[in-house]
Image (tube, rainbow, N blue to C red; front, top):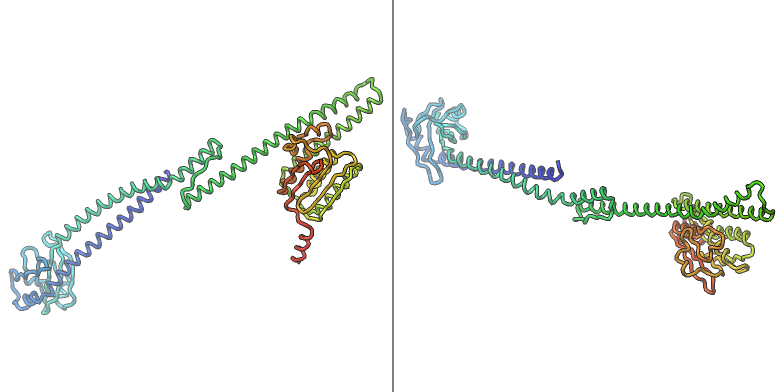
Length: 468
């Protein structure tokens, strides 16, 4: 059964119950009101002094009818019957079957008491009977036909029954219309869900229809689609980046592996006719190509690990870490002066990744600096700058130097994998920072690494003292 049909049935049933209960209440109230009017008319006749005198002053007749009492303006014609304590009829104002006399009416005639009201059937006529004690072992019964009351109640029953049927039918029709309007947002939501499931298209949205539960459901569905779309976009971008990395890595690995294999095959040839000088040159090439291959593999591993969320981050003295990197770089390139100005500060990061990123920046600057020209490293607050005095970066290469495996015209003749600056950018983004390159005043290149989460050492110490 559909949700719309369930709403229609429930709403129609609720209205039907309400209509039936209202009809029953109307019928009961009308019946009570009509019978109350009859009872009031009977009591008025019983209280009429003329009636009492009429029966009390006359000697009890042995047979025949008692005199009739003309009803008042607010009374209707009825029957009167005089009885004794044994239930014998002493006189009556009508012919035909007498009014029934029960035990309560006999006791009323014998002992007196409050008037009694009852209903009876006399010669096929439904009547309302009031019994009033007269004393001396007698009682008088006043009866009034209920024909008009019964007729009115019967017509009222018919009208209420027709009203119930019409009301239920109208309730069912209105319930169907209301259910259609109520489930329309759910229908749109269902269609959107089916569209997503069928086409995998996450761009569709539902216009919220208000602040009610269905409106909030539509807003939640749109938020879920937004989150899912971002997730899918991120996944697609990650898959694309991985495929691009594999394609670029395979291209970059092909050349050193092929050259290394060729040189090794030449050295393995039996009875080869090469000089000792050529053999030494081939071995040197093998060593150089092996080192290049090792460097490339290490860079690829770092890039692959950088895609994972950092789980072993810790607070590091960034200035001390940079000093260690500078010391190691100086051992590899003693001819290049490394001038450092480092402000003590704390950074929450993965030490090995941060060390590799800063090492790549300094190695890149050393690589392009002329012999004897200094490389300047400056750490002030959240910004680290590395400046060389080399030829600088060509304008056409500047937008791409942080891309994986990109090597500008100036760099193609130098050793390297083209992944060093890509690793720097990856580390910067993981720390919610950025890396930028530009021309330095007076020539050379200025690399600017921004790390917004860096805290000066003085602030950290002051905070720890205040907490203590």
